[in-house]
Every structure is written in structure tokens, then in C-alpha cells.
Image (cartoon, rainbow, N blue to C red; front, side):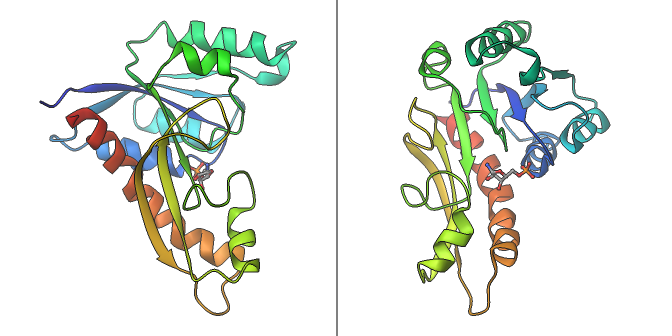
Length: 191
Ligand code: GRF
């Protein structure tokens, strides 16, 4: 059975994964729609992408809250204004506490630019190249309280080529991210 999922997409910047989700949701047979885009940074490109797509946006600047918990309380309250089935972290650069993650059990997904469990955290491409790996990729996973941890939904692989820089590898992986995220949403909707 396929459900139609209402998504909240959380961003902090460029929003190219958000764009991939906007484009997927524009297809008639895609089992999701974006109810709201939330950014923790004002004025970012991803907010413009959402507005161009006619999607409601909210900006919650984390710097204007006294603590991580206060920010998350505001985030939870904001999300409560929309019919959200699934929270999609798409380049959202804030770590979520266990308290927040536990309020949305199995309802938060993240995209990470490595083949998890390898290379959790930042600078994934530089570390994979420095280790002489022959393969890199991306992972969409359900979010658990530990950072970049949780059941894997979709992984897509790319080769690491001689002469690759973190930048050239990031471009190759990002192309796959844009395929992986809609695939993972479809998987969850059809579950
Ligand atoms: C992506 O590489 C994503 O995997 C990582 O942050 C980057 C965000 O890019 N979590 P964008 O904002 O979606 O363009």
C-alpha cells in the first residue's frame, strides 16, 4: 500500500537536495508533497528554491535561542503547525538531541555524503581520498540519537578516480544524492 507522505524539509544552505525533492514531488506519481521547508539560517539559497516552488517556509535562526533545547522546542512547535509525516534533513547543519529525535520516532531521515557507517561527520570526501579508498557514495538513513547513525534506507556508490579532489568527488556524489533521496522517500511511502 502506498501512503502519500507530507514532508518537512530542514535545510541550512544551498538546498540542492531540497530541489531534488521539490522536483520529485512535482511528478504526478510521486507519493509525497512538501508541507514546509524550515531553515535555521536566514536568507539561504534553499529558502529561495522553496519559494520559487510555491512551498511555505519558516526560518528559525538557532542563534536567537538561548540553548539547543530552546531551539528544538521552537522547531517542534513550528512543525506542529503543519501536517508533517516525515522530517527530511537535507544539509541541515544542526545536531538534534535525543529528546527531539525521540519525539519523532522513525519519522526523521537524513542524507549523508558517505557510505555509512564509514566517514560519519564532516569532510567525508577528503577523508575517503586520504585513505586511498576506491569508492565513495551517499546514504539516506533513519535518524537515531547518535550522529549519522540509524537504519540505512538507500545507498548509492561512485568510484573515486585518480586525481580526484574533495570538490570533484563531491560533485559526483551529489548527483547520486539527488537520486537517492527521492528513492528513499518512495521506499518509506510504499512500506
Ligand atoms: C549534502 O552533501 C548532504 O549530503 C550533506 O550536506 C550537503 C547539503 O547540500 N548533509 P545541499 O544543501 O542539499 O545542496
